[in-house]
Each structure stands twice: as structure tokens, then as C-alpha cells.
Image 1 (cartoon, rainbow, N blue to C red):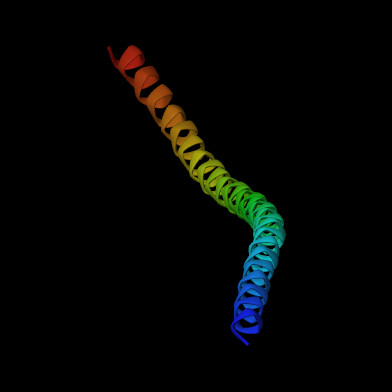
Image 2: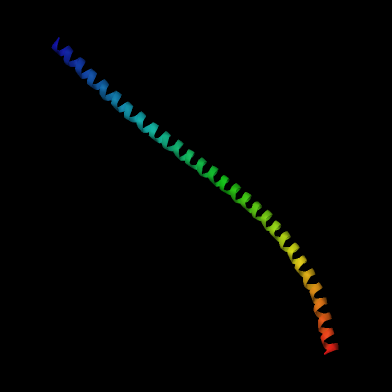
Length: 104
């Protein structure tokens, strides 16, 4: 019976070693799988962020163009008003110069 008990203990130890080895192998497989999934998730996140950044840049450029066009329109309008005032004053100034020359 003592031999049977020793054999049973040895068998239990061998089974424990096999389970430990299998668990270590499974852990390595899971680590490799998880690393691959993590790298894939990282690449997907990088692409998503890159796409969002491109969209934000595109939106910003569109807003800049709109604002530029608005400012350009206002500036051209103000320029036309100033030009019209200057032309009317030019006529007045020329008239005054002529009066001084004639009366002079």
C-alpha cells in the first residue's frame, strides 16, 4: 500500500506539472493573441484619429475660406465707398484750385 501511495503522489505531481506546463503554454498563446489584438486596436485608433484630424483640417480650411471671402467683400465695399468719396473731393479740390488761380 505504501508503494501505491507513492505512485499516486508521483502521478499527482506529474499531472500537476503537466497542468502547469499547459497553463504556461496557454498563457503564452493568449499573450501573443492579446498583443496582436492590441496592436490592431492601436492601428485602428491611429487611423481614426488621422481621419478625424484630416476632417478637422478640411473644416477649418472651409471656415477660413468663408471668412476670407466675407472680409474681402467688406473690404471691397469699403474701398468703393472711399474711392467714391475721394473722387468727389478731388472734383471739389480741383474747383477750389481753379478759383484760387483765377482770383489769385
